[in-house]
Image 1 (cartoon, one colour):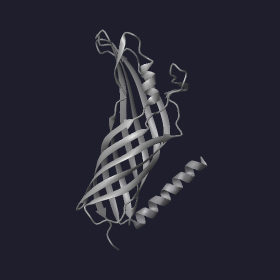
Image 2 (tube, one colour):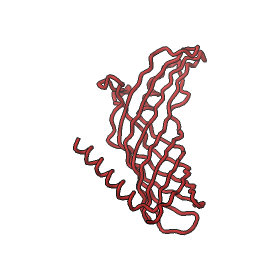
Image 3 (cartoon, one colour):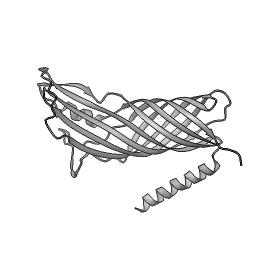
Image 4 (cartoon, helix red, strand yellow):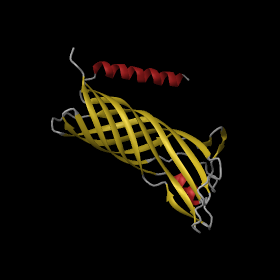
Length: 234
């Protein structure tokens, strides 16, 4: 509890410090694609099928969305962001009967972002950034019959972890707007295993008796659009 209070006080201090000294406020939206590891979940899918089934997709790369608000002071920036990404797997019957098992995972990840922007007056400017946040994942497993009717109530699991991402961005400045291209590596830590929602003592295991957790480690590449609002001089 004390750690949470300390964290909240630290965030509030940073917010007030940057807000009072900020030279500009940036409101942005980033969209991109993530190439996630998903090792545990891929293994779970591989070992879940029988001889009458086939894997159609197994957690392929997927898009993500990330709005943000950032305060900039000189060459340093600080802000808040929220990231949403998702992927999944599909298992079908080999006899083309239409029976299938869908597994979907989505992630809500609020966080903070720091940036370093070397002094540069050109229209194209490089910058470094790092993000730190909390991941809240939802894993849903559904089974469907040949007629597309859901044959179970759906299994819902939850998993959490912390994440850190660092990367490089190239920004193109057009008056009050910024178009950016970025690439970074998303790394999770302090990972918790997936647990059945409403029954947290029930965790997912693979055939090798390993517990299953998040697998969001991987590279992300995105395109961002930002509107700059300058602070009026007093």
